[in-house]
Amino acid sequence: MPSSLIRKSKSGSLKTAQLFKLKLKAVRAGVWFSALPRIDRVLVDLSIRVAQSVRSVALTESLLSVARKLEMLLEGKVSRAIREVGFSLASRLSMIAQSWGHRAACSWGSDHGFARYLAVMKLNG
Image 1: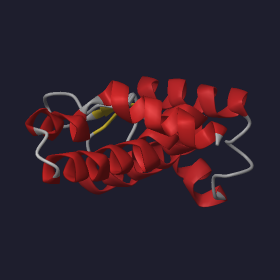
Image 2: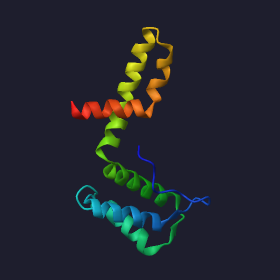
Image 3: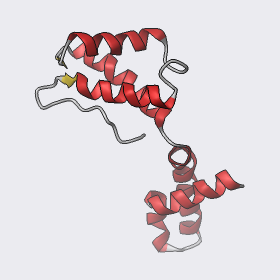
Image 4: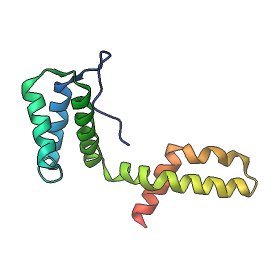
C-alpha cells in the first residue's frame, strides 16, 4: 500500500487539513467524482466543513477507510504493479533460487529494486 498521507495525531484526533489536501489531489486526478461513492464524498466534505480535527473514533475509522480508498486510486501504475506483481514474483524467484542452493537469494523477496525490475518487465511484456 502507498505511504499514507493521512495520519492521526498523538491525541488520536484526525486533522481535517490532511483530508482537504487528499480531496484536492483526488479532484485534480479526476477520481473524486468518478470512483468514490457519494456517501464517502459527503462524509469527507462535511468533516472538512464542520471541524478542524476529528476526535470521534468511529468517524476517524470511517475517514481513514475513505482515505485508503483514495490513496489506492491515486497510486501510480508502476507502484501498483510493484505492490501487486513485483514482490510476489520476487519471492517466488527467491524460493526457486534458494532451492537450487543459492544462499544469497533469501533477500530477493524483499528487495524493492528487484521487485520494481520484475514489475516493469511484466508491464512491458
